[in-house]
Length: 483
Image (cartoon, rainbow, N blue to C red; front, side, top):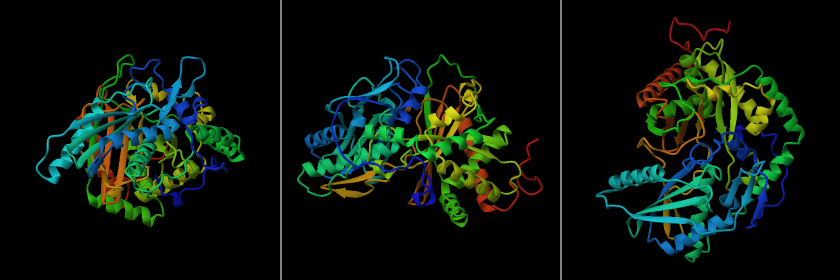
């Protein structure tokens, strides 16, 4: 996601009351993101949006003498602090709504890891443990709180903490806030006065704020924008290796990879020269990839944005992410620079007029979502990680935390997504471009995923090396104009 100073202020940003905390229980209106999740409800709790495998996971190394009793208390503190972690979506009583439950103990599972020889061995084993937890985790949405913790210990002073939440109650940003709060609560319980927990808003307040914001004049203008922008559009699908059977439970796998540092450096350099973000450069290349794969020139694709337009909710735990449609007609783009420029302008527009996806759908043509039901193809969502990088090699109290960010171990059994496939890039400030492709292995062979990534990488390398050369090389001409 582009840095905050590159984004126009969203029409959803309005004045809010003072931050406050609390542990109130009761009925809550759903947020737009939760309502979006309900749109992908499979009607049961075995798979799909409300299935036990639609989870969010992240892991950290913890170094220092660890007190398990205090860690359990800190986990419970955070579950009590954030009502979002205790909110169940009730779907069987007419219109869905949220039910906030009282605080209850968090499940903490402790495992002993075989001590490894050197630091590299331990780091590899830490990542394997994270994958194992993610592969084995099932999050029952009928049990509170919807937060699980697994601790793998190399010894008394070296451990791996993996947090798991159901995706209906959090997102990638939220789980980093959860860990930060756990670290602070742990330190405070160990007798350290600093740091202190920041002021925060409850997730239910966000849902109420959102409803008020949707009546704002700028939201009206945003609806008009999307109605015109999406006229006649359909999402582009990428052909699969096998026809999807709607009555078959998906089997999600994940392929993790790293592009070389030269691509990382060149992406940042072109972005800087064009006064845009690296995300915009990568997304432009993704649109080129879609054109090459499908032949479509008027491309409607998707990306995720954080959904946290109002800074008052940056410390809130809950489901915020927003699916945003991006429509770019690549016709007539002669060079890669042309394509980046056109993509940049479109993304800035989308950010300026960002609305909850449910509101966008209300303005769109009736068959906009029909490609999601295509048994011969999938909608791929492309994103660059947008969450605060918290506790990376930081000492909080008497424990040092470091994120397991450089995940390169692929897996044939991983958490699910409600539909389609996901390409997720992470631009590590250390100088690496890391990535994840999550896909249904009943639809794609891994060899096909590798082929697509190789094609994308080659397109990116060529575009960065010669941004002012013709897109397909000398003599091949521009992207053909639409007929």
